[in-house]
Image (cartoon, rainbow, N blue to C red; front, side, top):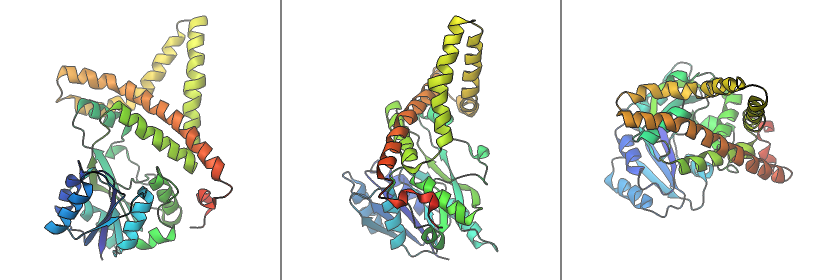
Length: 332
């Protein structure tokens, strides 16, 4: 069975060597690696060309200026020759057994068409630790039967990719969720490989995190994803919370206990995840990490509430002339 690893890159000069080195150190080496550059303006392309010359990896590099992530992945897969495609991203560091763990289920007697790997934070700063605890589920929290894998760590057969029409090139963010949902509709259940770990650094600043979640939510709006989640968020911030604050001032200060209880429930999971990280930190850094959690949580919610309607308007303006936007109704 031939296995191709694919990825897309754009201006990843600062982090690309980590990915290439970790691919070269896999216990199950890839049969080929195909990376599509979307038109980088930094040293990304020269790093890739140097890696080709070094020969540590069976690497092919394609340049597709202006390609979004979906287009880049589709181009890479179309140019590859593997029976199984393993997808990852620039900016990650792969565990040595990542590919072996992803591939193993395909070699069983009843192989799945899709195998989910996992990704875990590779946090280095106090802010990144708080970020990881706030927004990223732990491997233990994952329910394999419901898990939608990130394309940082997933493998699928060429047949499955072809059956669902590849990644949706009309979508610039959340493209892997639409791809996953179409795969799950056709090929459920997925295999699950918790040892297929991709390590990646969370966003290192509040500004970059805000932009990331704004774009994710805009992608949700474009793809018509998670209506209920977004509705609940709007109702919480724009209706329930203001109402509780008004009642707390007019009726009884005991209403504020409800707000405190709600905040505790809202932050319980992030603080539970944060606890194991706190031990090695100095006291000052522990206090900073604890304080960052609610700031990050609220910032992410605000970014989502701003991004989602922008994506929804984009979708509504294009529905009539673009049948691919009705992806849930497409045959698979």
